[in-house]
Image (cartoon, rainbow, N blue to C red; front, side, top):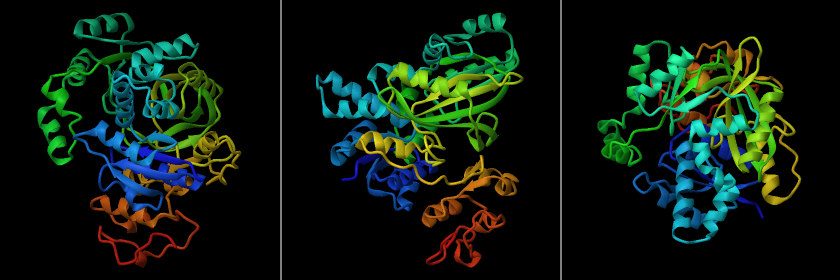
Length: 423
């Protein structure tokens, strides 16, 4: 019998659909709890989709768990992870040693580490205790604390708000004026207008409560490391790393945004840091680690943890580099051969991120462009969502060895009957 995975998502994020496909291909039965019209609904991966209700987020995930009875829950974004942490806490407060608590700990690891992975400063202090290179990071409660830091450490510095991801809530500042402006913005409660829009249009109360209660995010100040970014994604089980992917970031959507082109690398410091963090926090499931590779030395400074899969988690790149296959083996106890590597090219342009950033990007020719040709509905849905751009843009580049017929793809946002991208 196939193990059942429940993918939990609060955002309509394209990589979540890729992850579901990868787990289905690895041999899992996949269900999902996600917002309506999620990209996963355009794939063949999920046997059943449960509705994520932003007005009752924790309850909707709990209902999906009870309906699914999964072997594992995979959070697809940071908010989904926080909901699972909250569900675990509520079950404990009710005095229940419930199957739900056991499932969440089996999926994410020991509950002792839940608070640590949500707090940037506490996490990096733990990393330093493990002998991992990490920039000095402290919580700053007010402008006076921040000024004291700058007096001691100088510019530039990095300001980061807890509870944010994807580059939101991160500012690199170089002057006192920039610092004061960024600190006020990061520490301010969510704007009421924005929170109300999320509640009324998206049915999501996540921002409304902090806005009404004037709840201020925790802001951290971090020493700046000169260099460029790198990222790791790991599959782990009871404190042991099962498989990992390590990438150097070559291109980003913006200075503080997510990567669009990455290059596969071997970096002992990144690998060792992953092993130490996973062991110390007794992690299970999928996690991401972000690094800065210092200019000149190439030393890897750990800058934060992502308590969920990252956008590269679906990539199958050979033995010990196939995360879904590794977790399938852990769940079932069966030895499984990793999938055939999707490419021998070490440089990967992530679809649709790089194509969306620049349809004329040279990486679309030189790198492996990770288009899911086997899921034409997903490709069409992604293409059609990009306003002012058609599938013809995608066809400008020889992205696939498969035959591509322009007459059979959707053009200018209007899908043709029976249209496919790639045969």
